[in-house]
Length: 329
Image (tube, rainbow, N blue to C red; front, side, top):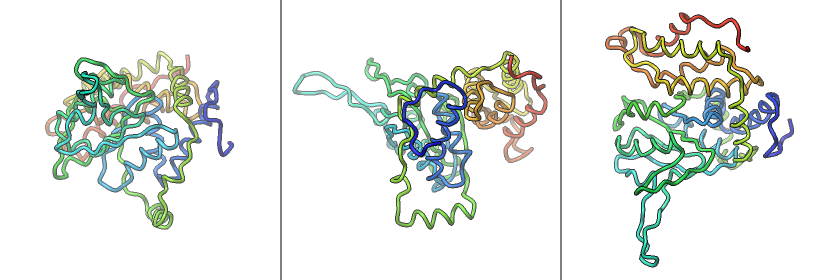
């Protein structure tokens, strides 16, 4: 692979898709040491037209991951620091009276960027959190009756502190359901942390990131990923998994139809990243926890069974639901 591949090559097959996305993963990976799964998850959300929620303690690289991805794809990026006094208009924008023209004009909020970093989203009020809902779902915001389109592609990378930390507000169920995936980056291993100390003492790693794609090439990758084949048997398998969450006695709230759709969309990109133009069952099961777990609620008393009852229930469902014999038909 050339060090600087063309920014807008035409994607015509699975191998070329994998080559182009590998360049993005490699570029981001130079900044995020030892976290290939987190990098891949962020790219899946971008190419599947979803949004990413990263839940972890402060200081593990959540914001750096989003900025590195934005720099690698030459995207505009804005960061919103969510605080208790943040207003919805700060996110979406406001109408301001212009005394010269004697009319109101729209002043864009921080959400107008290709990649929006919603930092510590659960430190603001639910009213402000909900200001992101229309933007995340529709790619637009409506202020004073006027609709304003957001840039395309559009990705929200929200970071969240664990709920047991002081000063946090739980995300509403509707807001959680808008995120395609939730991941936790975790602490780096000893080798990666030592490397970080040596490399970043005097140099900002983001300054060395070079764009290997742009908005046009990302749009091409998104369009090609939509064409990845999902066999009817795989669709039925995915629906069976979702329905099993709704009937599971260990779960109070199961997966929504939106969750089922986003699981398939994410699986298409996951398959394409591996150089395939069709989805296999392993693509679906690899994503079931990051795509579904944050949307589900454990049944009362399920916490006594383990520290992560939702994840445990999903693993049992995967073992219980029959895997289709054919993946490409």
